[in-house]
Length: 391
Image 1 (cartoon, rainbow, N blue to C red):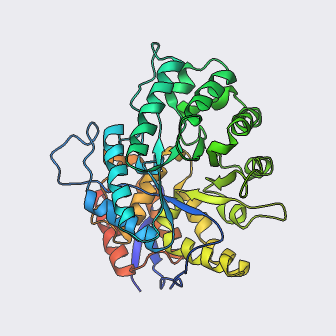
Image 2 (image 1 turned 120 degrees about the vertical axis):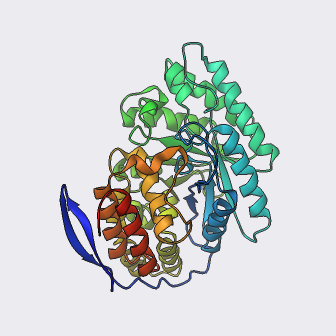
């Protein structure tokens, strides 16, 4: 197998010999857990644009990646933070992405797509009011529903900036949830993913914020399919999971957004389990699909054996500053041939260091996730050469 000299410490290189990739068994959905992969967008590297100011998207490759996820049994969580929403992807292009994904899903048997509705076209500022936040949410929800789409109600930077109390959050969510045509998935995105969302729900401490969120859910349970929490804290997720309303067909679902502890949260315990809506499923889709297939078949041992080696990779991709995890997700797509370049919307390929990318490469190889080692090695060499590293 190929051996590369990769950065291993500041100013130092060490040899790494690639392993034989794992052959993940093809799963047969449906799974016994609902599993969404939050999907990235593929940039167009040859567009005549200013990458920091105006996104340029390769729509064909972007939709092809969604077809890849659907083929593995995943639902697609569209236009979320994994797609660089709020970090290069604006609402205009997000809506076009949503339109194209919904159209592609209609042509794909069994395909499921939920799409992010937020307020990102409303810049936070001193003139922003709660009523303006409500109007912004209404605009995006209405646009998605007009396309026939299902909604993931994203956290709002503008709401965080203008809210003065938990009652403001209750007012906004109550108004929007009273209007949606179908139950939505709420998304509580922690400040580690987006510092502008610190203090969401009107409380600075997560457990106090949870009480506010649970009250909002209880008051609108018939309009809430579930909630995805992204706090990177399994204990908080389990506490909240056990307190969700148990109304109707199974009640309000917990969708784990914990890219550190997803395996044990999806497996669950004697009191329940989490479904999944994860950015890491973009990067480890073949392994995650095979693991979910094993769990569905009653083979929890194989489920954990498949996912265990992916957890160190995920924790590395999502390490602080966590908001830069998109760089690792797209790098994995590049290494595995889902796109022909390592260029990102907003120039975000520069958000992680050569040392970080080298460790990502080693961990992906250890997990058996480099589907074609020769291609991955060639592409790693090209990226390292840009950083002045002869591998």
